[in-house]
Structures are given as structure tokens and as C-alpha cells.
Length: 231
Image (cartoon, rainbow, N blue to C red; front, top):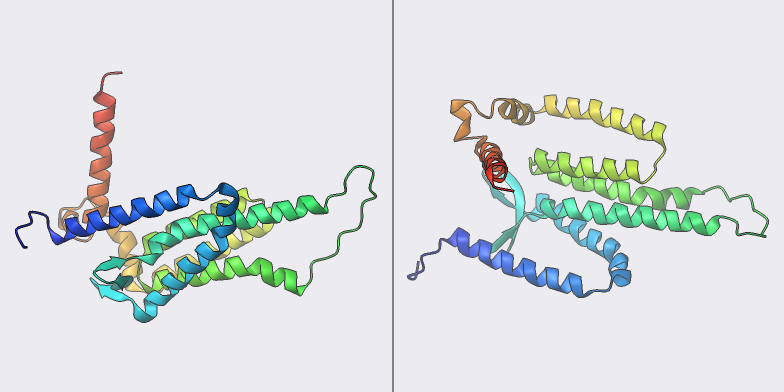
């Protein structure tokens, strides 16, 4: 419109890319020591935006996943992928630093560590509780793909971070059983898995599974191009 050859979608992408570059430049200018202190405020912003979606979110194609900031819709669940990385990385790093501070130094008699109290357990549970709430908000938007990615990221960081192995296995089993139950509880969830298994069927390629098929095709083309390129 207005003589422009660009579609509204293209203009929207250009604006978002410009905002992204500005944010990137601001973050890059912050010193690492100060940046490390921002993981809690950053997660709080992501948490509030994601949890706001079920209440004031914008619906599109039968799913409520977006917030509208003026003419630009944003999908907070996408930010949760990076947010959960920063939150858990910062939390585990802080926990390890606290553990090292409690270790006896050379020439100093070791003290028996004080057992953690209720307040300690409550503080340690807060990150996981907030992640569970975010996952619930994402599921409300029928975004199973993002839910699985965020959950996988959280579990991977927890494993690498050194959580109790037996407890970790128990939690994974509970998630697996609960996930199977959740998938079977709603028809649309089960349909997502069935559609993905049949994504290359003729009646699916240009419909429900278009994005997945397009992504796989583009990756295959890129791989074939790189393999054919001269060394």
C-alpha cells in the first residue's frame, strides 16, 4: 500500500529485525559482571509477559499465543527459551559459588554444615515453580512445540548442573507419564503427534504440517548445497 512494494509482513519483519539489532547492541555493551546480575530481572520480564498471554493475549488461527505492542505482535513463549537458559545457568552458578564459599580453607577446621531450613527449600523451589507456571501458560496457547523445547532445555541444564541423579530420573519418569496422559487427554495434542508422523502425506504437506515440511526441505537443500560446494 502507499506505493510500497513490500508487504505488511515484510515491513513487520524489518521493524522487528531493527529492534533486535538495537537490543543486541545494548546487551553487548553491558559488562559481563553486570550482565550476570540481570538473569533474575530478565526472567521476571519473560515470566510476566508469558503469563499475561492467557488473560490479555491476541488469538490467531485458534491459538492464543501473542501480545500486541501497537502494530507489532510478539510471542512471549519464544523469549522463554532463552529466559530459562539464563535463569537456570545463573541459578546453578550462584549455587555452586555458595557451595564453594562453605568449603573449609586450608588450616581452618571444617564445620558441620547447617542443614537447609524451610526458607532455603522455598528459595530453591522458586525457579522451578516459575518455570512450571510458564509451561502451563505456553500449553494454554496450544504451543506444544515450544513447551517441549523449554522443558527439554530445563531438564538438560538441571542434569548438567549436577542435580541428584536419582531425583532427576524420578522427575523425568513423572514428566513422561504425565506427558502421555496430557497428550491423550485432548484430541488436538494427539493430533499434533499424528500429523508430525504423517507430515509428508499429500493431504498434509500444504496444510497442517506445511511449516515442518518447509523447514526440513530447506535444511536438506542447504545440506546438499554445502556438500556439493568445492572444498
